[in-house]
Every structure is written in structure tokens, then in C-alpha cells.
Length: 451
Image (tube, rainbow, N blue to C red; front, side, top):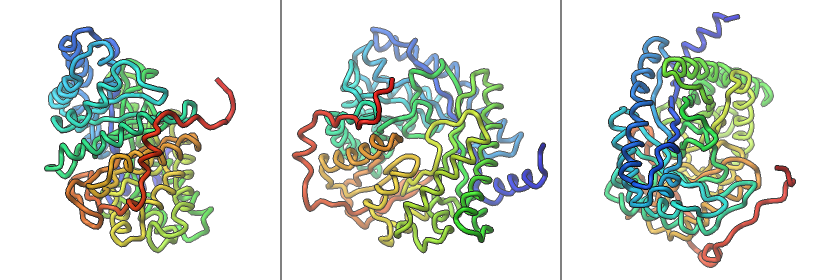
């Protein structure tokens, strides 16, 4: 039974506390678009995306207007494009341009899936796509790319890790005149989820239906506001977060079911991640500080983040039977006003962020690093993050942005949801080059031989 107090609290979250639906993302399978002729394949890709997603933006806007719930982004994720390259051959950038054309036609904010899954090795099309990523991201505006280089069951493909350090660096260099924006649209995963609605890592997994719609909710401001009224111990803090996460997720469930009905496609999942923005009052760092930390990044931050992530999940799963994606708390430095402040003050270091990724939703997200960082050091950071994900059976990722021609302490400014990133100091005193150049494979950890 609806409680009028809960309804009014949710309305206040929307009006005063930056609560919103961060994204409605349509996942589209392109497996039936494979063709030995790349031009024919691209035509099929464009036709299918524009046919299925032609009403996506309008539907989102209609729901937003009718229910008064802000829906910030409307997005599309597609089958990893490397799979199509395997059939067609040719220049993979043609697919990137086709995805951009489809994004322009449908009016979506981003389209993800210029991706390859290489955690157990390279299959046909994978290397061609990976090597094309820098160019693809430089000639498109709304296309996002991801590569999965490891998993708990398969270990870490260190050949891919070595290559991805070089690809991240090239993606930044080729877009240096645009604040290295190419690297900001590229994610390197371990244990990548196949139903993630958030960019830049979204792709439509091969186990997903032909077409479905996912919802990503957000609400750091609402959680922060609720904690301001909580004067109890950390058990009370956890309960307060759980109750707030329940309300946030119910709103996402409502939007997802309604969007599914109107678009005539199955409802996928609600991703109940707390995704911050640079807006004042919409910060995960401020939540951690409200628990009692003077500044995010000080000792105790990892424990506070673990509490937050767990409480968000426990509250969310009670509100929806279709929770998926990443679900938890994001810590993208450039997109969180509190994280930005702590990084500038020196309270938040790259090492501390790495420790925090062991207990949060994703990993080292939107981290600007000095432009002269060698590719092998980028690879080593990726490897460290992948190891955390592999051993802990969780998703981890790196979205690292080498700020070309900039040094630690300077700022990299994107604007909008991507915000601005203080360029973080990293350890360049000694090199991991020999370790990275060994390549090969880091074996999967022993857990149990279950199939």
C-alpha cells in the first residue's frame, strides 16, 4: 500500500536533491546484421538500430513529462562490434561511423558497443577492432568503446593488457586538441557485465534478447540528504541508506516497466548505481563525508564506501526483481564535485582510489594522468585493477585519460556530465615495462572447479 509520506519524500528527492533516472538504454543485438560484405553489414546495422530505437528518445521524454521524473540520457548499446568484423573484414571504423549516423538519426546521447571481449584470447575481428579504437573515437562524437581483458574464471589476458595501454595512450594523443576526449570514451574491463546501461562501458551481451530496455538510476544527493538527518551509529546509517535506495530503485523499476511497454520490447534490468555528477549536492564523496570523514580519501574511506555499496545493493534488491548491471556506488573523479575537491587538496590519491575500487561498483573511473605517462605504466595500472576484480569476483574497470601536454596538478576540463579532472600524480620513478612486456596470461585464481 502506498504511503503518502514516502510519495512526498520521493517528490522532494526529485525537486530538491538531484534524484533522476540517469539513463534509459536500449540494448540491440546485431548478430543478424553480420555479412561478408562490410558495406552491406553497415546498412543492416543502421537499419536495425534506427528501426528499433526510432521512438526511444520520444518515449523517454513522454515518460519524463507525464511522471515528472527527470530522465537525463537516452542511450543505445549494441553487440560487440568485433563480432561483426569477424564476418565482414574490412575497416572497422566504418562500423563506428555507422553507429554515429544511427545515434544522430535516433537522437540518443551515446551509443556503446564498439567493443571486444578478449579475456580468454583474441578471436577473428578482435585485434582489428582494438587497433582501430583511437581512430574510431576521434572521428565520432557519441560512440563509446570497451574491451574486456580478464575475468575471474579465465584470468587476465596480459597480451591484451599490453596492447590496451598503447591504445589508451593513442586515443588520448589523437584527440589532444579536444582535451584527450577519446580516452574518456574508452573503458578497459575485468568481469564486464553484459547488461550494463552506463557509458562508456555499455554493450549488449550475446546472452541478451534481440532487443530490450535497461534503466540506470542515480541519487547520491538523496542519500546524502537522508544521512544529514541520521544521528545514530553506523548500523543506523546503513538502514537509512537501504531505505533511500529502495525508493530510488522503485522509481527506476516504474520507468523501466513503462518504457518497455511503450516501446514494445522486454524490460531488462535496473542498475541501481549511485552515479554522481559535478553538480553541487550530487556527490558520492559527500555521502562518505556525511558518515564522519573530514575529507574523502582519508583513512576510513574504504570502509565507509564498503558500507555504502552494500547498503545500496540491499535496499535496491528489495525494490526490483530485475537488478543487474553494475549496481552500487560509482567513484568517477571528474564527475564528482567532492572527489574533485579531495583530489585537488591531496586527500585522495591514485593509490587510495585503487583500494576503494575493491569495494565499489566499478574501478578507476575518469582518472586524468600526466600526458607523458608511458603506455606500459598505463597497462600496469590496468593490470592492477583487473587483478582486484579477478580475485574478488567483481567488475573492475579503468577509464584513464592521459592528459597530453599537461602535468600533475593541472586540470582537464570536459564540461557537462564528464566534468573536470585534476591530473593526478602517479609513480613514474620505476618502470613496470619488463613485467608488462612478458605478456602471456595471469592464471585465474583457484576458487572451485564449478561449471
